[in-house]
Amino acid sequence: MTKVAVVFHSGYGHTLRMAQAVAQGAGAQLVAIDAEGNLPEGGWETLGAADAIIMGSPTYMGSVSWQFKKFADASSKPWYSQDWKDKLFAGFTNSATMNGDKHSTLHYLFTLAMQHSGIWVGTGMMPNNSKAAQRNDLNFVGSSAGAMAQTPSDASVAEMLPGDLETARQFGQRVAAVAGRLHYS
Image (cartoon, rainbow, N blue to C red; front, side, top):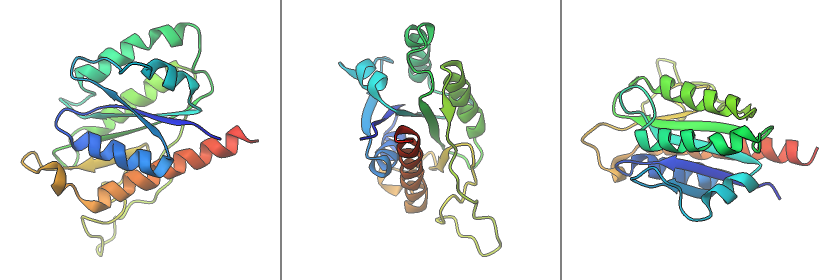
C-alpha cells in the first residue's frame, strides 16, 4: 500500500483545512508543524516511511511561514543521508489575495523537494479561465505547480470556497495515484 504524508504549517486554520482536503484525497496522514516550528512525536518517522510527501504552508510575505522554514532547515538531516531520494513531493499554499505571491511559496517547496532528490508532482489540472468561469470552479486560481487557494484576510476557515477545497482534494488524489503507479511498477 502506498503511504502519503502531508506535512504542513497553518497559522490561522485555513492551511489546515486545505491540508485536510489534500489528505482526504490522498488517503494521507497529516503531520502538523506546530506554532514553534516543530513536528509532533513520530513525525520524522512518518515522513521517512512515506512514498510521497505533500508539503503545505500559508504564503506569508511571499514565501513559507517561518515555522515551515524551521522544519525545512531541520530536514537537512535526511537530506545529508539522502533518505528522501526518489520520493514523490508536491505542495500547496493559501494566501489572502488572488496572486499573493503564492507561486514563490510553491517554488520554495519545489526547491526543497529537489534538494532532497525528489520527484515533483503538479496538479495535472487545467485552469478555469474562460469568460464563463466562476470563482468557485475547480482550479480557478489556475496553478499547475501545486494546489493554490485564496481566502480573504477577514474570512473564517468555514468561509473557504468549496472549489478551492475540491481542487486540493483532487490534487491529493492525483499525488496518491502517481505514487501508487510508481510504487507498484
